[in-house]
Each structure stands twice: as C-alpha cells, then as structure tokens.
Image (cartoon, rainbow, N blue to C red):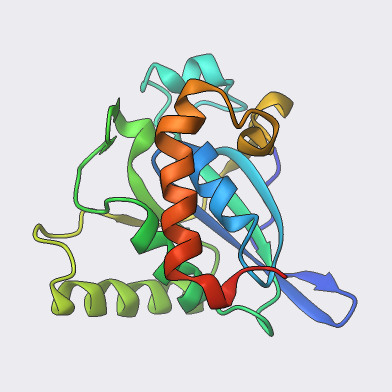
Amino acid sequence: MSDQTDAAPAGNGRYEIATLAGGCFWCLEAVYLELRGVVHVESGYAGGHVPNPNYRQVCTGRTGHAEVVRLTFDPGRVSFRDILRVFFTIHDPTTLNRQGADVGSQYRSAIFYHNEQQRQVAQAVMAEISAAAIWPDPLVTELSPLTNYYPAEDYHQNYYAQNPNQGYCRVVVAPKVAKFRKQFAADLKK
C-alpha cells in the first residue's frame, strides 16, 4: 500500500499531495498533467475497504474505492485552493456516483484530504461554489480523510497521452482537456 499522507520533501521546499476523485481517473490525470505546479500525477484507487484492489474489482463498485488521481504539487506554484477550482470545473460535482455514462460509486466526486488544512480549504471552496450557485443542483462531493491509497495498474498511467485516438479518450477525455485549456490558459505548463 502506498499511503503517504504527509508532504514530501522537495529540492526547493516541500511538495504536497492531493487525492481527488471526479469520475474516470483518465480525465483528471490528463488535465492535471498540464497544470502549472503539478509535478507528478498518478491514477489509483482510494476510499474503499478491499486491500490492494485491481481495476476489475473496483469496476464492480463493491470494493468501496473511487478512481482517483494523486497529485504531487509545488504549493509555491499552485495552491490546493487552485487545484480544487480546476477540480470543480472539469467534472460535475452534483451527480451522485456518476459522471456522464460512467455510473457507480467508483465514479463519485470526492476529495480525500491529507491534513486538517486541506479539509478546511476544501470546505471553504465548496461553500464558495455553493453560494455562487455555479451548478444548478447542490454539490454531492464527498469530503473524507485519506485512509488508503493504491496505485492503479501501469497501463492506466498517462493513459490519455498514450491513447489519444481511443474512443473514450476522443469522446470524453479530450473535451474535458479542451475545456480546461480554455478556462485555465494562464495556468498551463509552458
């Protein structure tokens, strides 16, 4: 099990880690790989009760895990608040256990916080989004402490970049990446 919940040391300070679920991890991974300040993105599974699950098990919805991305980021270049602003733009946080045609608890919207500061920032961002009525329906995003994390199989890592012509990537991932690039153009890696 890979369950680092503390910040990891970096060459010029400290990197932090965020773990987010917003539907298929391929979508989130493709976007966050392009966000300035994010130094590593890994697809994985979190929030369930089965140790070391595999993709086939998670897809059943019976392990309790969500498909997640684990972001390692430089808080001197991108804040956790900004990471969450992107998060709430690139998926629908108002549909319970669903993102588009992907249905099941493994596709839920969730923020698995690593520390009290992340919990407080997430609560504040969620309150701001709710107050601004950006979405017509209430947020259903789960806010839970990270209790476990397991990396997904190697073939899921950097999936969109390696499979841009695959059907799901063309129809689902590419539009989310395009939306992100348009709305957050100033925040893209150079």
